[in-house]
Length: 335
Image 1: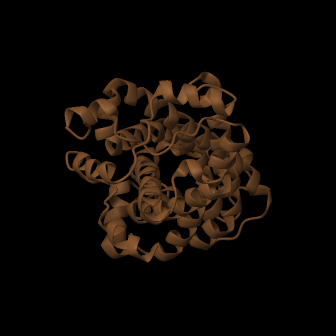
Image 2: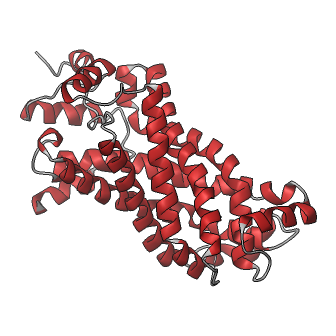
């Protein structure tokens, strides 16, 4: 296992796509090739393994949305105390329900839309380009999903921060919303949407793209046997490890914007640029270590729960992508 650390370290999740075929080609000559993952092969696999639905069907998207609700709702509720420590505040248990509802909405949008956009963009690119540019595909799909998720999340995020950072302001979402609307109008809920996009879109792009490429790297260089020979439990362990690694990078790229959003929603009449200027470079990085621990654990648990829901509902779970046979022929990698 230790001998695999060097090649793993050389693997960059955002490796240039035109270099990837040569690497894959070398590996394929040394190892038996597996069948490429296509909609047709997934459909055949579904019939063989008795999946509950077809990959990319409405039922598939709906159940993925359920998985997103559970993964985001449960994990964010569990880490509310850590989030409050970060904000240096205490809240009573009445607030947990409101926060759970908020992250249930964004979980539904984030995970559900990601699957939709990943398949949509993959079909637009075609099988070969979807493989060559798979990292860009993951980035585009996750950014698109998060854009819409944040529109739903912004009002609840604003209310959550107001409750956390202003003692006595309100105890629940039901109390906070009409009070905020009466004081500042609809702008109270969406003045933080732009910095929320700045925080959440890079976070989600890293969360999904880094996770997908880390899973691919783990099965290629670390796990001592093919994914098809791993038990469901072993596959979920890989999911958890990949999720934690992705979470560390998520915390780093999103922390400055998170600092701005927290201050912006606490103060009335401030703009993102004013808060950023006042905090300065050093100020936006305060609390990074605590955020890494929180987000790393959070992201790992989210992916573990999400993948567990897929296993429970017997949803198709495509293996890491393989180079299509047509591309191998074009590159002269097969005889």
